[in-house]
Picture 1 (tube, rainbow, N blue to C red):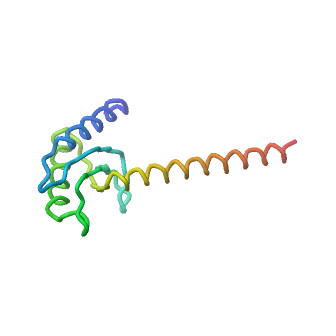
Picture 2: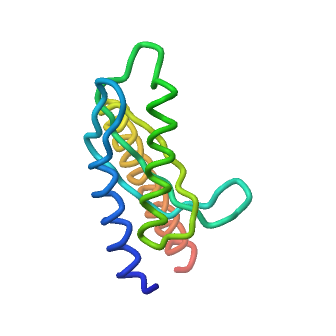
Length: 124
């Protein structure tokens, strides 16, 4: 499968996951599916799912079980052979994750720019 087609299939999978009916008062707000390497180094996928309606004790077991089963079923229907790991977030947790990622990327860029500047000075 070409990289472009694979990206399209992952987007299709994310849209399909948004339509999954979940038990209880929870509802899916946002989904992102991305390539992932599991603990054994095997190619897999990771579905990041923003769910509204988390209880104080976390996510109910029937919700997480249903989502894992449904997401992997949808992936198989799209001819994706990788296992899909499912991670649930509240909207706030997802926003916090995004801001942390942005800060890390920004810090990395500053560090890289600084290192390149030092290399240039040493090479003069």
